[in-house]
Length: 634
Image (cartoon, rainbow, N blue to C red; front, top):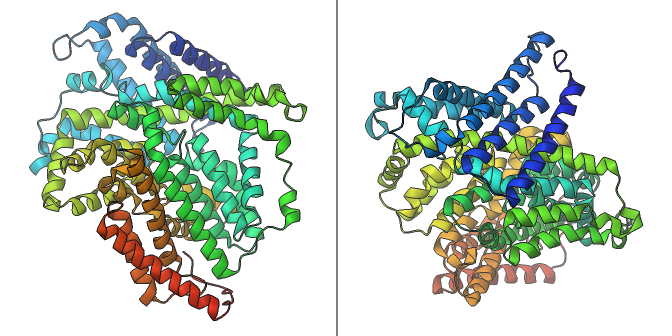
């Protein structure tokens, strides 16, 4: 903002308001408040922060006019907050569809919806705004649509009541998740990154895997998975870790687009990795009404399968292409780990508290506090005022960039539920698939991927959960498995062309071709692409059932995805022909889908691994095969 509120003043004001938001969040954690109090305060404050941190970018307008527009939006956000505070008593005691709706309710509701649309545009771009506008249009003019899409439509008063005056719209489950879970974990991620936790993870990964075959790629995968499990954002993870990992991979002979693709898919998978996972996982806990710790436990085996398959793929590609490992000298250039190992205490405390049954929010706040204590255990990791201020500035900023878009998705939920669109869509999907569980799952999979192109994972997941989960559950699939199925594919949409947000970010960091990077990351994702089908057919994969069954399911998934990885790369000591790749690949896919321990699974896995063993033995007898100088990307 060049006048009115200049940029320096805006940042200072945002910092002060952000501190206030942190204090408010700690206060409501200790002294819980009514939903129609804490949610409006949280949402209005994050709107103000978003408009301060992301001023209007419109070069065609003079600076003073942009400043006026931003100031007006900030004033409107404060006015909406004042409305909710002054009307708190009336809103909490009124009866929906019975109590009168006043002009002030309509004015405040319209203003809030407009603020959310503009906030979503600034945070994540136009695609989400168009989705929101489509649902708003459907709310008013659904009566003109044909077939199962037709419904009578809402009047203005009914629409405002549904979306802004109750806890079923923008102040519903999405904002509740932001207030109760997301903010605290964003706070922890910002605090841990500020005191050097992210750098520790990367250095641990380099020390652990740097000298192995394909060591730089493996280090990138390990480091990004660790950091991604804390940050919970694919794009943020790419930007923070990619500046180190992508140049490191390029130095060892990995092409720029493949290095960027590896970073993109590794960072994307962080949303699947406990203990934090992504924002969508917290929403899932709210939608299912179960503790977040249960979601994190259910996500552990799929996340391990995802990353182990990815590690195997980059290992085979490195062997096939002759990619060099890091030298001992290069590995030793990383600072010593032992003097910094105590910095692992905050995430260990977080995991321990979750395991022992403490609430997710309380665990995250305690771990955040320990972030500023652990560095003082040893003199070499002491922090100063700068690191503390960085954390206090970044946490509210990142929270605002998440809270506003997911609150806006409350419009989608309210319209889809109140219009019965969700149930109608489920019926239509079942009709289209003719009741086939495989066809229904395939349609839901493609729907999530298409819908997730250009949308944040949490936005895609919420819409997918509203539209697809009822149809999947109607097929007899358990709710947890249905939600995880949708969640997984919405995560993978971050690297699915033509719009792949994580891939685009990685291409920018690595100065690589955007499309080549997207195709490379998507190709790498295929190694774990069919893992969600295991959720449906084998509950043990999601840690459901006896311990023995869970262990067997985990082992079964790992050996099956490993088979698919071998077939996918087409290398097992020598180049595989399609005559061997196809049966190995089919055996791997069948092993993923078939429940662990069944005759089908045993036959598939035994056949696949017998082929792999025979080919590997043959390659050893005939001597090593020289690596390819160049090869097709995967």
